Image (cartoon, rainbow, N blue to C red; front, side, top):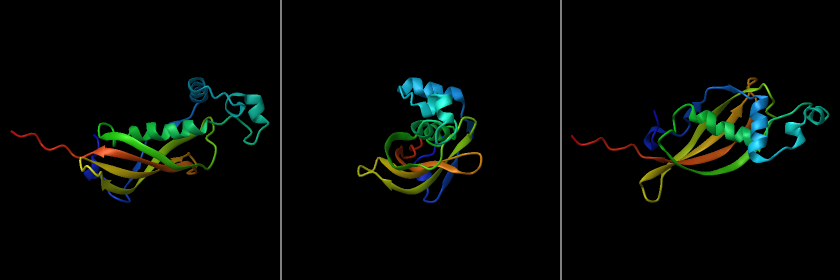
Length: 152
């Protein structure tokens, strides 16, 4: 069930279900984006690199945040538009086998200038199974106002 503008409050937190990042996720993402950087796709080269193994693309982690939070249903059917991604930081690698979830904190809400929708300012965090924040930043969204009840 979607949440509407009126349902959000500063400080509110949403937590998604978790999912495990697989080798297939990384290979698929590389194929879709054309980003075949060895740190993601070459096990031998990655083993000799900084992280000692292949890691997920940064943009894959960001995309997982959006997909994971959609599993809560909070914005399904009420989101109008993603307004931007700001101050995104990659804090730690996402590794094959990591189980991650998304955490969203509502920073603020305001009506749009037209007054027919609202802006929800959100801070996203992608958190691994150890409780480490691997990525974080802002992704504000425009959402619908609660529909008026139908007249009888």
